[in-house]
Length: 422
Ligand SMILES: NC(=O)N[C@@H](CC(=O)O)C(=O)O
Ligand SMILES: [Zn+2]
Ligand SMILES: [Zn+2]
Image (cartoon, rainbow, N blue to C red; front, side):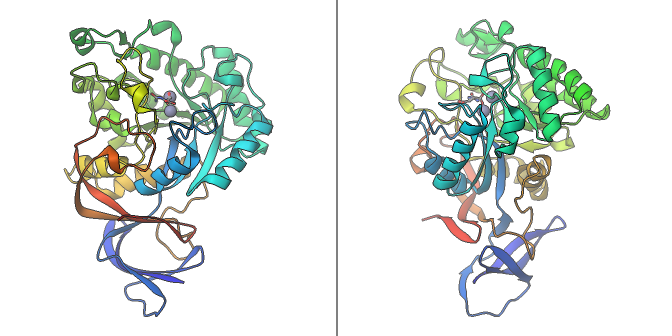
């Protein structure tokens, strides 16, 4: 048994002070005062939430353990306040058969500090035109399906994948990128790319494939989920599709909410990711979409890489930045403290919406009977983001030096303390 004393928890959108009793892996009491002589943690008014949920992370094991492992990635998740994540399949080997998927799930389970659910690949090696055994992988425990890292290039592959995913009632998650429109681009096409002299990626590579997919999604009835949405045109398409009854959800990354291509002022690959940072107009549109609910949730797209790789020029470095240790602090500081959204809305977008959309077992509130997957945030504590403090092996973030509030003090998974700040 454990007691957390004097925590602030969200009830009906308001922060109220409560004591919380945990027995084993379950919350057994929530009340204004709980008398008890069990082991007690004094929260001193810090914010206690059910653990955050991230439906889009890259943990790199097996295949790229120098970038991240399941142990380091999941420890980073705990430090970021996340207790459930869904890991992408761009690994080596790619989990693209029921046997490989089952092996990956077992590896996640034996290595991770938090709950790690797993994506199965839509097609073999993320690039084949023939679809994988989606029904078999679903039976083997896949949470959802994606070829993240690569766009699905042909309508036929996407249509078959959607039909199979619809049959097993699991989300089909799309990384939108039409290869024929890329032309070797490395940052958003536009004035900033021209100024720096780097080849551009048009937003049409994303939105044109999205338009195709929304037509196919409507025809199949699949739950179609848009990964890392980045353009105004894409937000408009999702908004229209939702109005027409397409079963579509979308996620946006913290960096597409907070940064535009104008933040790239030199050839610094810490700002290189896919999709690229877009225009200020696009950034405003994804933020508006998150606020009005067109975009359902935030997902970090935590994409750790080695510093040697990311120290290369923009043209040579791999796409991707980390995010799981900084996302809550950044969004709390830049969106909640500034009054753009409420804390309750941020928790809706970083916990409740992902749990509901992906049909996860994770708890969504601090209530009696819920699993004790919990995080305690100090909303008043001011920090400066420093990569030295990351427990992730990935130090590749453009947010170094940003002043943020909302430090994670402690994280529990199934009632066990898995992270504690020093
Ligand atoms: N987002 C990225 O820029 N990179 C991701 C792949 C992906 O999410 O498309 C990675 O695996 O590094
Ligand atoms: Zn992607
Ligand atoms: Zn990704």
